[in-house]
Length: 365
Image 1 (spheres, one colour):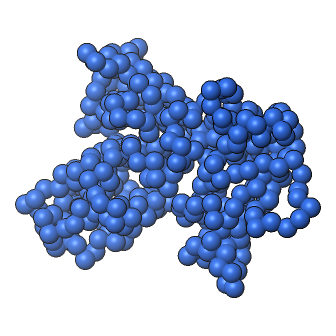
Image 2 (tube, rainbow, N blue to C red):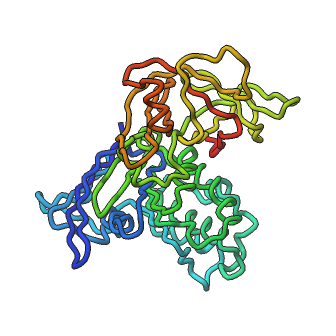
Image 3 (cartoon, rainbow, N blue to C red):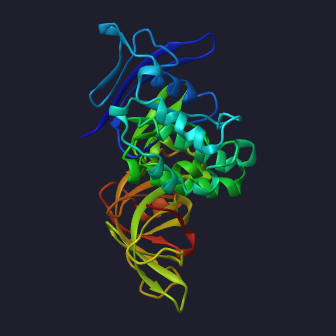
Protein backbone atom coordinates (compact mmCIF):
# COMPACT_ATOMS: atom_id res chain seq x y z
CA UNK A 1 0.00 0.00 0.00
CA UNK A 2 1.23 3.51 -0.82
CA UNK A 3 2.05 5.34 2.39
CA UNK A 4 3.00 8.76 3.71
CA UNK A 5 4.89 8.76 7.00
CA UNK A 6 6.01 11.98 8.66
CA UNK A 7 7.29 13.10 12.04
CA UNK A 8 7.86 16.76 12.83
CA UNK A 9 8.72 18.56 16.09
CA UNK A 10 9.15 22.26 15.46
CA UNK A 11 8.97 24.99 18.09
CA UNK A 12 8.23 28.64 17.43
CA UNK A 13 8.05 31.49 19.98
CA UNK A 14 4.25 31.16 20.29
CA UNK A 15 3.53 27.75 18.73
CA UNK A 16 4.76 24.14 18.93
CA UNK A 17 4.10 21.64 16.14
CA UNK A 18 4.35 18.00 17.23
CA UNK A 19 2.98 15.75 14.50
CA UNK A 20 3.42 12.07 13.78
CA UNK A 21 1.33 10.50 11.00
CA UNK A 22 1.32 7.30 8.98
CA UNK A 23 -1.50 7.43 6.44
CA UNK A 24 -2.36 5.95 3.04
CA UNK A 25 -0.88 8.04 0.22
CA UNK A 26 -4.01 7.75 -1.88
CA UNK A 27 -6.75 10.14 -2.91
CA UNK A 28 -7.27 13.44 -1.12
CA UNK A 29 -5.90 13.69 2.42
CA UNK A 30 -7.53 16.63 4.17
CA UNK A 31 -5.86 18.53 7.00
CA UNK A 32 -8.49 20.27 9.11
CA UNK A 33 -8.63 22.17 12.36
CA UNK A 34 -9.26 25.61 13.88
CA UNK A 35 -7.22 28.66 12.91
CA UNK A 36 -3.73 28.56 14.37
CA UNK A 37 -3.67 24.79 14.88
CA UNK A 38 -0.71 24.25 12.52
CA UNK A 39 -2.26 23.24 9.19
CA UNK A 40 -0.08 25.42 6.96
CA UNK A 41 3.00 24.76 9.09
CA UNK A 42 2.50 21.02 8.61
CA UNK A 43 2.18 21.54 4.87
CA UNK A 44 5.37 23.60 4.79
CA UNK A 45 7.19 20.84 6.69
CA UNK A 46 5.99 18.26 4.16
CA UNK A 47 7.25 20.50 1.36
CA UNK A 48 10.62 21.09 2.97
CA UNK A 49 10.00 24.82 3.42
CA UNK A 50 10.29 24.37 7.21
CA UNK A 51 12.88 22.01 8.68
CA UNK A 52 12.18 20.07 11.84
CA UNK A 53 15.55 19.36 13.54
CA UNK A 54 14.55 15.77 14.37
CA UNK A 55 12.03 15.30 11.56
CA UNK A 56 11.40 12.65 8.94
CA UNK A 57 9.23 12.41 5.86
CA UNK A 58 8.89 9.39 3.60
CA UNK A 59 6.52 8.97 0.67
CA UNK A 60 6.55 5.36 -0.51
CA UNK A 61 10.21 4.82 -1.50
CA UNK A 62 11.07 8.52 -1.51
CA UNK A 63 12.97 9.56 1.63
CA UNK A 64 12.84 13.34 1.61
CA UNK A 65 13.84 13.86 5.22
CA UNK A 66 15.48 11.68 7.85
CA UNK A 67 17.51 13.81 10.21
CA UNK A 68 18.82 10.71 12.03
CA UNK A 69 20.70 9.88 8.81
CA UNK A 70 21.49 13.47 7.86
CA UNK A 71 19.00 13.47 4.98
CA UNK A 72 17.11 16.61 4.02
CA UNK A 73 16.02 17.13 0.41
CA UNK A 74 15.01 20.73 -0.41
CA UNK A 75 11.70 21.48 -2.12
CA UNK A 76 13.44 22.17 -5.45
CA UNK A 77 14.60 18.54 -5.51
CA UNK A 78 11.38 16.93 -4.23
CA UNK A 79 8.79 15.68 -6.68
CA UNK A 80 6.11 17.87 -5.10
CA UNK A 81 3.60 20.29 -6.57
CA UNK A 82 2.62 23.14 -4.23
CA UNK A 83 -0.58 25.14 -4.82
CA UNK A 84 -1.08 28.26 -2.71
CA UNK A 85 -4.15 30.33 -1.80
CA UNK A 86 -3.28 32.68 -4.65
CA UNK A 87 -2.59 31.28 -8.11
CA UNK A 88 0.83 32.99 -8.41
CA UNK A 89 0.75 32.79 -12.22
CA UNK A 90 3.29 34.73 -14.25
CA UNK A 91 1.36 37.83 -15.42
CA UNK A 92 3.58 38.39 -18.50
CA UNK A 93 2.91 34.87 -19.85
CA UNK A 94 -0.30 33.50 -21.32
CA UNK A 95 -1.92 30.37 -19.95
CA UNK A 96 -0.12 28.05 -22.36
CA UNK A 97 3.28 29.45 -21.39
CA UNK A 98 2.42 29.27 -17.68
CA UNK A 99 1.55 25.61 -18.09
CA UNK A 100 4.67 24.87 -20.12
CA UNK A 101 6.82 26.42 -17.39
CA UNK A 102 5.97 23.48 -15.13
CA UNK A 103 6.59 20.99 -17.91
CA UNK A 104 9.92 22.47 -19.06
CA UNK A 105 11.43 22.45 -15.55
CA UNK A 106 10.87 18.69 -15.32
CA UNK A 107 13.49 16.30 -16.65
CA UNK A 108 12.30 14.52 -19.78
CA UNK A 109 12.69 11.07 -18.21
CA UNK A 110 10.43 12.13 -15.28
CA UNK A 111 7.58 13.51 -17.40
CA UNK A 112 4.47 11.39 -16.90
CA UNK A 113 1.75 13.97 -17.60
CA UNK A 114 1.20 15.80 -20.87
CA UNK A 115 -0.14 19.25 -21.65
CA UNK A 116 -3.07 17.74 -23.56
CA UNK A 117 -4.08 15.63 -20.53
CA UNK A 118 -4.05 18.60 -18.19
CA UNK A 119 -5.94 20.83 -20.61
CA UNK A 120 -8.62 18.17 -21.07
CA UNK A 121 -9.07 17.29 -17.37
CA UNK A 122 -9.17 20.91 -16.21
CA UNK A 123 -11.22 22.09 -19.22
CA UNK A 124 -8.96 25.07 -19.97
CA UNK A 125 -8.49 24.74 -23.73
CA UNK A 126 -10.33 28.00 -24.44
CA UNK A 127 -8.07 29.82 -21.96
CA UNK A 128 -4.69 28.91 -23.46
CA UNK A 129 -4.06 32.23 -25.26
CA UNK A 130 -5.28 34.47 -22.43
CA UNK A 131 -3.16 36.29 -19.86
CA UNK A 132 -3.86 35.60 -16.12
CA UNK A 133 -5.42 39.03 -15.61
CA UNK A 134 -8.14 38.09 -18.12
CA UNK A 135 -9.17 35.03 -16.07
CA UNK A 136 -11.60 34.65 -13.20
CA UNK A 137 -10.25 33.56 -9.81
CA UNK A 138 -11.45 30.00 -10.36
CA UNK A 139 -9.87 29.86 -13.81
CA UNK A 140 -6.58 31.12 -12.42
CA UNK A 141 -6.55 28.36 -9.80
CA UNK A 142 -7.28 25.71 -12.42
CA UNK A 143 -4.29 26.94 -14.41
CA UNK A 144 -2.14 26.94 -11.25
CA UNK A 145 -3.16 23.33 -10.60
CA UNK A 146 -2.34 22.48 -14.21
CA UNK A 147 1.12 24.06 -13.94
CA UNK A 148 1.83 22.02 -10.80
CA UNK A 149 0.58 18.82 -12.45
CA UNK A 150 2.89 19.31 -15.43
CA UNK A 151 5.89 18.86 -13.14
CA UNK A 152 4.65 15.23 -12.89
CA UNK A 153 4.78 15.31 -9.07
CA UNK A 154 4.50 12.31 -6.78
CA UNK A 155 2.61 14.46 -4.25
CA UNK A 156 0.40 17.56 -4.51
CA UNK A 157 0.13 20.00 -1.60
CA UNK A 158 -2.80 22.41 -1.62
CA UNK A 159 -2.91 25.21 0.96
CA UNK A 160 -6.51 26.47 1.12
CA UNK A 161 -6.64 26.82 -2.68
CA UNK A 162 -10.28 27.98 -2.69
CA UNK A 163 -10.20 30.42 0.23
CA UNK A 164 -10.02 33.50 -2.00
CA UNK A 165 -12.94 32.41 -4.18
CA UNK A 166 -16.63 33.17 -3.78
CA UNK A 167 -19.14 30.34 -3.38
CA UNK A 168 -19.98 30.13 -7.08
CA UNK A 169 -16.30 29.87 -8.08
CA UNK A 170 -15.73 27.21 -5.42
CA UNK A 171 -18.57 25.13 -6.84
CA UNK A 172 -17.03 25.46 -10.28
CA UNK A 173 -13.57 24.26 -9.30
CA UNK A 174 -14.38 21.48 -6.78
CA UNK A 175 -15.33 18.94 -9.50
CA UNK A 176 -11.94 19.48 -11.16
CA UNK A 177 -10.10 18.79 -7.89
CA UNK A 178 -12.20 15.65 -7.43
CA UNK A 179 -11.03 14.36 -10.82
CA UNK A 180 -7.30 14.72 -10.16
CA UNK A 181 -6.85 11.48 -8.22
CA UNK A 182 -8.92 9.43 -10.65
CA UNK A 183 -7.11 10.82 -13.67
CA UNK A 184 -3.52 11.09 -12.42
CA UNK A 185 -3.35 8.92 -9.26
CA UNK A 186 -1.39 11.54 -7.37
CA UNK A 187 -2.04 11.79 -3.61
CA UNK A 188 -3.12 15.26 -2.52
CA UNK A 189 -2.66 16.80 0.92
CA UNK A 190 -5.40 19.41 1.07
CA UNK A 191 -5.51 22.07 3.80
CA UNK A 192 -8.80 23.86 4.40
CA UNK A 193 -10.76 25.55 7.16
CA UNK A 194 -13.98 24.90 5.21
CA UNK A 195 -15.64 21.72 6.45
CA UNK A 196 -17.91 21.56 3.38
CA UNK A 197 -14.83 21.18 1.17
CA UNK A 198 -13.39 18.49 3.45
CA UNK A 199 -16.61 16.47 3.41
CA UNK A 200 -16.92 16.77 -0.33
CA UNK A 201 -13.35 15.92 -1.26
CA UNK A 202 -11.51 13.87 1.31
CA UNK A 203 -10.83 10.16 1.53
CA UNK A 204 -8.59 10.51 4.58
CA UNK A 205 -8.56 13.28 7.17
CA UNK A 206 -6.01 14.53 9.70
CA UNK A 207 -7.54 16.65 12.50
CA UNK A 208 -5.17 19.07 14.21
CA UNK A 209 -5.55 20.83 17.52
CA UNK A 210 -2.91 23.14 19.00
CA UNK A 211 -0.16 21.66 16.83
CA UNK A 212 -0.95 18.02 17.58
CA UNK A 213 -2.88 15.29 15.76
CA UNK A 214 -6.25 14.84 17.46
CA UNK A 215 -7.42 12.17 15.02
CA UNK A 216 -6.58 10.69 11.64
CA UNK A 217 -7.82 8.00 9.30
CA UNK A 218 -10.64 7.39 6.81
CA UNK A 219 -13.00 10.35 6.93
CA UNK A 220 -16.09 8.30 7.77
CA UNK A 221 -14.32 6.75 10.75
CA UNK A 222 -12.86 10.00 12.06
CA UNK A 223 -16.16 11.88 11.80
CA UNK A 224 -17.89 9.17 13.82
CA UNK A 225 -15.46 9.28 16.77
CA UNK A 226 -17.35 10.51 19.81
CA UNK A 227 -14.26 12.00 21.46
CA UNK A 228 -13.76 14.44 18.57
CA UNK A 229 -17.07 16.27 18.99
CA UNK A 230 -15.23 19.37 20.23
CA UNK A 231 -13.39 19.68 16.90
CA UNK A 232 -16.39 19.26 14.62
CA UNK A 233 -19.12 21.94 14.60
CA UNK A 234 -22.59 20.86 15.67
CA UNK A 235 -23.88 21.68 12.17
CA UNK A 236 -21.56 19.02 10.70
CA UNK A 237 -21.48 16.36 13.41
CA UNK A 238 -22.64 13.11 11.88
CA UNK A 239 -21.86 10.19 9.63
CA UNK A 240 -20.61 10.17 6.06
CA UNK A 241 -21.95 7.29 3.99
CA UNK A 242 -20.69 6.34 0.54
CA UNK A 243 -23.55 5.02 -1.57
CA UNK A 244 -24.52 4.03 -5.09
CA UNK A 245 -27.63 5.27 -6.90
CA UNK A 246 -29.82 2.24 -7.66
CA UNK A 247 -33.29 3.60 -8.40
CA UNK A 248 -35.09 6.83 -9.27
CA UNK A 249 -38.70 7.38 -8.19
CA UNK A 250 -39.86 9.99 -10.67
CA UNK A 251 -43.39 10.14 -9.26
CA UNK A 252 -42.30 11.22 -5.79
CA UNK A 253 -38.94 12.81 -6.64
CA UNK A 254 -36.88 10.38 -4.57
CA UNK A 255 -33.66 8.49 -5.20
CA UNK A 256 -32.87 5.08 -3.70
CA UNK A 257 -29.27 4.64 -2.60
CA UNK A 258 -27.53 1.38 -1.75
CA UNK A 259 -24.80 1.24 0.89
CA UNK A 260 -23.07 -1.44 2.95
CA UNK A 261 -25.94 -1.62 5.46
CA UNK A 262 -28.97 -1.48 3.17
CA UNK A 263 -30.78 1.34 1.40
CA UNK A 264 -31.56 5.01 1.92
CA UNK A 265 -34.06 7.32 0.26
CA UNK A 266 -33.10 10.91 -0.46
CA UNK A 267 -34.69 13.79 -2.33
CA UNK A 268 -33.83 13.21 -5.97
CA UNK A 269 -30.34 14.47 -6.87
CA UNK A 270 -29.12 14.76 -10.44
CA UNK A 271 -26.99 11.62 -10.45
CA UNK A 272 -27.69 8.69 -12.75
CA UNK A 273 -28.23 5.08 -11.75
CA UNK A 274 -24.87 3.46 -11.02
CA UNK A 275 -23.18 6.68 -9.96
CA UNK A 276 -21.60 6.94 -6.52
CA UNK A 277 -22.77 9.52 -4.03
CA UNK A 278 -21.56 10.53 -0.57
CA UNK A 279 -24.25 11.64 1.83
CA UNK A 280 -23.95 13.17 5.25
CA UNK A 281 -26.42 12.14 7.94
CA UNK A 282 -26.35 14.64 10.78
CA UNK A 283 -26.45 13.21 14.30
CA UNK A 284 -29.28 15.56 15.28
CA UNK A 285 -31.45 14.09 12.50
CA UNK A 286 -31.24 10.48 13.73
CA UNK A 287 -33.64 9.04 16.28
CA UNK A 288 -33.50 5.63 17.97
CA UNK A 289 -36.34 3.22 18.66
CA UNK A 290 -36.14 -0.14 20.40
CA UNK A 291 -38.23 -1.97 17.80
CA UNK A 292 -39.99 -1.18 14.52
CA UNK A 293 -43.24 0.80 15.02
CA UNK A 294 -46.49 -1.12 14.63
CA UNK A 295 -47.99 1.85 12.79
CA UNK A 296 -46.98 3.73 9.68
CA UNK A 297 -44.91 6.92 9.99
CA UNK A 298 -43.66 9.57 7.60
CA UNK A 299 -40.06 8.43 8.17
CA UNK A 300 -38.84 6.54 5.09
CA UNK A 301 -35.48 5.35 6.39
CA UNK A 302 -35.68 2.75 9.16
CA UNK A 303 -32.47 0.76 9.63
CA UNK A 304 -31.45 -2.05 11.92
CA UNK A 305 -28.61 -0.91 14.15
CA UNK A 306 -26.38 -1.97 17.01
CA UNK A 307 -25.30 0.39 19.78
CA UNK A 308 -21.50 0.55 19.62
CA UNK A 309 -20.61 3.30 22.07
CA UNK A 310 -22.24 5.85 24.33
CA UNK A 311 -20.64 9.27 24.56
CA UNK A 312 -19.86 11.23 27.70
CA UNK A 313 -22.87 11.70 29.92
CA UNK A 314 -22.84 15.16 31.46
CA UNK A 315 -25.56 15.92 33.98
CA UNK A 316 -25.20 19.61 33.13
CA UNK A 317 -26.08 18.87 29.49
CA UNK A 318 -29.41 17.34 28.34
CA UNK A 319 -27.99 15.58 25.25
CA UNK A 320 -25.75 12.57 24.68
CA UNK A 321 -24.13 11.14 21.55
CA UNK A 322 -24.69 7.51 20.60
CA UNK A 323 -22.53 5.66 18.08
CA UNK A 324 -24.41 3.04 16.07
CA UNK A 325 -23.41 0.41 13.53
CA UNK A 326 -25.75 0.14 10.51
CA UNK A 327 -23.18 -1.63 8.33
CA UNK A 328 -21.12 1.57 8.65
CA UNK A 329 -20.83 4.07 11.53
CA UNK A 330 -23.82 6.29 12.34
CA UNK A 331 -24.16 8.91 15.07
CA UNK A 332 -27.31 9.93 16.89
CA UNK A 333 -27.65 12.82 19.33
CA UNK A 334 -30.56 12.18 21.70
CA UNK A 335 -31.63 13.36 25.16
CA UNK A 336 -30.29 11.70 28.28
CA UNK A 337 -33.89 10.96 29.20
CA UNK A 338 -34.42 9.05 25.94
CA UNK A 339 -31.25 7.09 26.56
CA UNK A 340 -32.48 6.15 30.02
CA UNK A 341 -35.97 5.27 28.75
CA UNK A 342 -34.56 2.96 26.07
CA UNK A 343 -31.97 1.60 28.55
CA UNK A 344 -29.32 1.86 25.87
CA UNK A 345 -26.09 -0.07 26.29
CA UNK A 346 -23.28 -1.20 23.97
CA UNK A 347 -24.24 -4.30 21.98
CA UNK A 348 -27.97 -3.58 22.15
CA UNK A 349 -29.97 -4.09 18.95
CA UNK A 350 -32.16 -1.13 18.04
CA UNK A 351 -33.49 0.68 14.97
CA UNK A 352 -32.39 4.05 13.64
CA UNK A 353 -34.88 6.41 12.02
CA UNK A 354 -33.64 8.99 9.50
CA UNK A 355 -35.89 11.39 7.66
CA UNK A 356 -35.23 11.41 3.91
CA UNK A 357 -35.17 15.21 3.91
CA UNK A 358 -32.41 15.15 6.53
CA UNK A 359 -29.98 13.40 4.18
CA UNK A 360 -27.61 15.80 2.50
CA UNK A 361 -26.03 14.58 -0.75
CA UNK A 362 -22.47 15.90 -0.69
CA UNK A 363 -20.37 14.32 -3.39
CA UNK A 364 -20.29 12.09 -6.40
CA UNK A 365 -17.13 10.12 -6.85
